[in-house]
Image 1 (cartoon, rainbow, N blue to C red):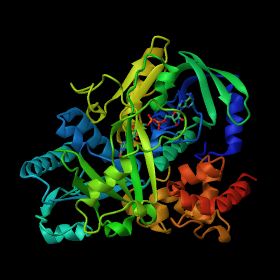
Image 2 (image 1 turned 90 degrees about the vertical axis):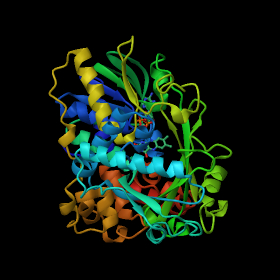
Image 3 (image 1 turned 120 degrees about the vertical axis):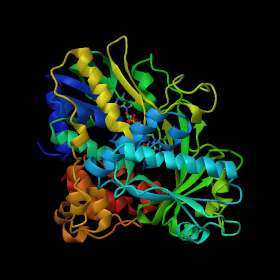
Image 4 (image 1 turned 135 degrees about the vertical axis):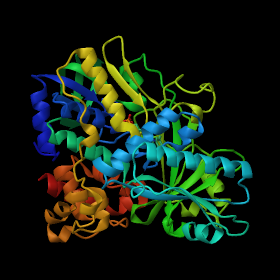
Length: 510
Ligand SMILES: Cc1cc2nc3c(=O)[nH]c(=O)nc-3n(C[C@H](O)[C@H](O)[C@H](O)COP(=O)(O)OP(=O)(O)OC[C@H]3O[C@@H](n4cnc5c(N)ncnc54)[C@H](O)[C@@H]3O)c2cc1C
């Protein structure tokens, strides 16, 4: 079976689904659903995943794109969750996705507003993070140890920060994704390579423990599918399919700014949020000369289907928090775009302050077998998707008595993955290797010469658009602009190249 997803495979596999009883139907094509599909199919189960929009249509493309070792969970005393994150980070960096996840240096400049208590607490937290990294078995060649730098070294890593009063800085390493939607697509394609059916534009209108009523949103046709187990992996929408699930979503906004306004961001920059102990704003380097500045955390209204919008004060709050330490503060004129996501946090699951700020709600995941027999997996984060999927499929197998092998995903490389030494020798531009891994050569080789050049300011080539349609399941220009490439994070750039993208999509579908 091939990892390639395209419109013809979708149509064929959707047709076949109506007459069969499959082992596992997964609803939701974010990182959680894709992870469950991969785990289940790798155990030898027959699997179909239905997603009402595109892969990564929901929260999974609005994250900070970090694969973090759980420092903030350590700070809140949840050592178990921090350890789980550190283990999963090591698996992604070292084994399953070294092309998509790379080490990222983070610097926290010790600016005058950073109190001695906060400095000492942060140093202690970073030291504990080092212990956790070792305990998780991640070698120092993958993630170096944290350390303290003097003012000159800090200024080199954080060139945009005001040097007056700078006492030095703290540096640590974590994982960063090339792109979160790219991870979802890679997991889904890996599942497809093992035989899972990945069906986008298919909505589950209702589910039971042994099947679902589906609508093909391309044609309007309806079908009933029978399954031995149904997994609800619909994130912030989980309560729509199982009313026993009550979520309390929180809204997180990022800004997209030019990285050169932050001195090129040789390292991710973390600075204290003014007036709030233990809360930080960060700037992360991103592809195409962009940087992401985040992150707000505010209670959100219940989601609709459209993309969430930033709150009225989100942009100003982020600019003010970061601007406080910069030589030349960012202004609204520097903001190229914004993106906002809703965290699928379970109501009541979390700290003693569950009724307080959403930042205090637990980021743990939960697997629940509902009264109707539907198994819901919700919460967690991108970093721990593999573990969430393992836990969910363990419940599926036990609850339904399915004949399945053990979980295999800790050692199952995602499509395009290879050890760093192999990736370093792939004869293709680094930008493509960081997105497609060993497939980067194929992306270029399969494209006619006139599609190998950039079509957008972010450097995206026509070859990538063609690959998205022929192998990554993109069905239209929006899938390409917003989920296969991230051109769409800057609306002006998307508008500029939309016609060119649409033309290549039509060519690719033909
Ligand atoms: C602002 C922000 C920053 C974050 N940063 C990080 C980070 O840096 N690192 C990290 O590890 N985690 C991070 N997270 C957490 C992480 O992004 C989420 O936990 C994760 O993406 C949730 O994935 P999901 O698959 O459960 O949900 P989703 O990605 O929302 O997927 C659910 C899918 O279900 C589909 N769906 C809904 N209803 C139906 C239906 N009836 N039929 C078919 N399909 C349906 C939706 O279209 C959607 O695609 C962040 C979250 C936010 C909000």
